[in-house]
Length: 565
Image (cartoon, rainbow, N blue to C red; front, top):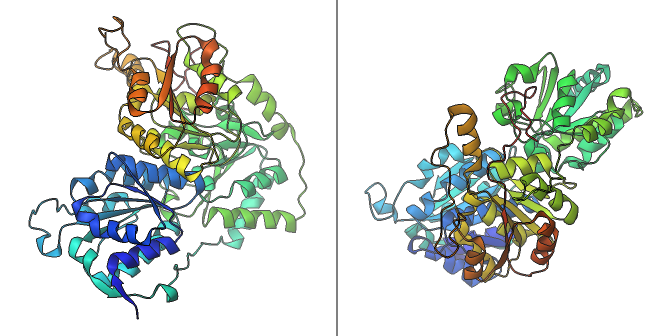
């Protein structure tokens, strides 16, 4: 049996599991791992400027191509800086492997330097967290980690490695080892038949495309069922991109924030909902009694903990989304059901068009809606968009027109400011053939802006569109309508150079990093700026000076969203 260090075995396993890139920062507590990474030489590494940036890059990478993202950090604060990223991945069902260094085993529990018990800290926000105490366990822990991340509802795993465990010598033969099989839960045939019975008996059925459909790479099957049964489709925000925005059956998105008016309208008229891979979270449902109404729900989810948690379904199916949708398709073919356009399904394109929100504003300062009009018109369907929490995300969710799965990357459950910049880098590394466009607010940009030099260093170009209104915009609006105040949310300030309220200079920051950028104040100049950014070949920051206090449509229930025009 060949002998090697535990970390040599670990890196060989990463390679055999398909890992091609790792994002991280070498530190004293993780150097044996980095030595093995260097010696094998087949996995590329990007050194980031902060551990949170590293895990968000791994996250964007994983979402862009549906694989496992990997990140590495040293012990103590290096490891604890992964917590936000693990939480984000957990709630959005993203498989991420976080590898952390640790002090030697004899120092555990002694408050030694940088010896925090990270495995215990992250247990609530991971599928599993290990602190490996024996070198011989390393290969099996890594193999099990990949199985756990991929099986059932995907999610993150952390492996904490004490220094002496990393240095330990073990017997391991990579030629006789292989990935563990990943079980996919098939649906119950009687439940599949009953689901189809319920859909065929309904007068106004809808299909709800949740983020789990995208995660399961089941969008094709989902759309095929909608077409076969001529059922209108609505999406949750995390399901955005799962069906082309202009598909004749696509009504829009349901929610109290990241919604479309037509999506909410069609949903409110429905009498039964086939929901696949949806969590029924609060920003989607709003007032749960309004959301439920008198309609029935069929809920398909691979995670049994989701069934009945936020909404009690009339029929719950705990199974893999793709296998379930394939089984429904088989049942449709078995019964020889023929697609028939009805008044219900046929009206979807008209409802969508008639309730579309206005975007053709010509005013200066630029209205945010106009920015998205120009984005929709300039960038083609192959563009991958990345966005994060704030009014920028809500406007993006409401107004952007996306045609392909995994071409709209967003963090929905946790909403950590700053996620989008490193996630854009990870997405570009995963999809170097794609144009990556990040849409961010001026406050959110400043959370993980230290990662911009990473994109320059590794020649990873993307376009960054900053919606700059000098506010914590989402909080300003919440203060205005809920607390009658405007307190500590303004971030523009006068500068000696300009003697006007503009605050942070995003263009100068980009140039200081070796990137490029420009400021846009005229809506007629947006497309030309997008063109320059897309052709720059380097990260390109477009600072769009917007109308300052534009309010965004939202509400507390899907039947009472307040519109602002």
